[in-house]
Amino acid sequence: MQVGRESVIVSRNRRGEARAFFNVCRHRGMQVCQGESSTGQRTFQCGYHAWTYDLDGKLIAAPNLTKMPDIDRQDYGLRGVAVREWLGYIWVCVADEPPSFEDTVLGEVVDRLGAVSNLDHYAVDTLAVGKRIVYDVKANWKLIIENFMECYHCATIHPELTEVLPEFADGLAAQVFVNHGAAFGEDIKGFTVDGSPGFDLLPGVSADQLRKYYAITVKPQVFINMVPDHIILHRMYPVATDRTIVECDWLYAPSVVESGADLAASVELFHRVNSQDFEACEQTQPSMSSRMYRNGGVLVPAEHHISIFHEWHQAMLSA
Image 1: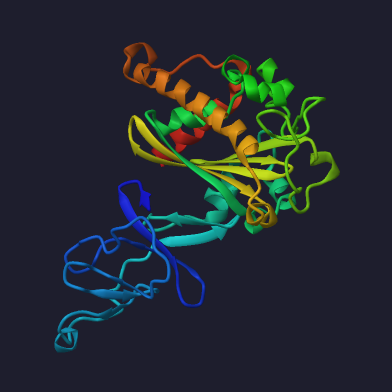
Image 2: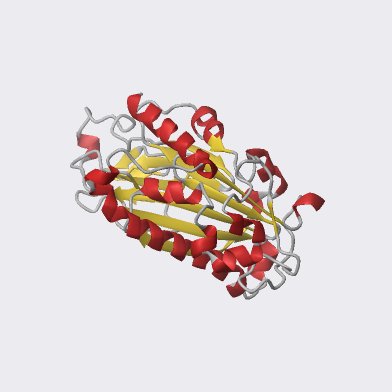
């Protein structure tokens, strides 16, 4: 996987523990893993000089290695990357001195249409990926963050979403009331593009959550959307000042995925929302280089979460 300028190998060792390494052979720097993904590997071998590493990153083989006593197999192993498992995903940090996960991830959750405690009701780490769509967005990652943090635009560009969640049409979308989930419309049966019923409820969903949508932002680049029968999780990978790769997963109860159920109506709703949002961000991107936008735009009161994000970003840059 690509993390900023770094290529990272993410795997599990033989004990099933998550591991991550810089995808750089210690010998001459060739990327050890060239493909996107593979399964069943017991080692990582560089295609240049056949330096071979085990699943814990230790150097275990190389041509004439036994004749080179000054080569320490542990010291010349792959350089590790900090990892942490949460919500069924592996989170990595490429910093030389990784900060606390609790402080920088769990402590940076933006409670908006939900609180991080809401996740306890959805058993996210037990769910299965029903659909993954990768979007190549020609816009800066911060524009996507700003877009997600407000619903002032919802009535303008999201007709399907406001049909399912009518209060989104007022431009406020409960953003001033933390953890006030947006309620489904009276005639809406499920979080689907046509309002049709969804699937099996996720484990732990409470009676108050049966007909509501919740959302939180995990700074700097993860969005988590919660509805009664599935989770929609976005991950953003900035690759240039005007380009961001967004991976979006639709997560369901394993029984739903295993049954081969038709997920089209369920997936299509947020796929349209994504497409509409990303088009708006791409149309905004050209003005980012205009001197008329040098100091940023005007934020209305319903966009106060964007101000909070700006303050956080400025503080991170200062640090």
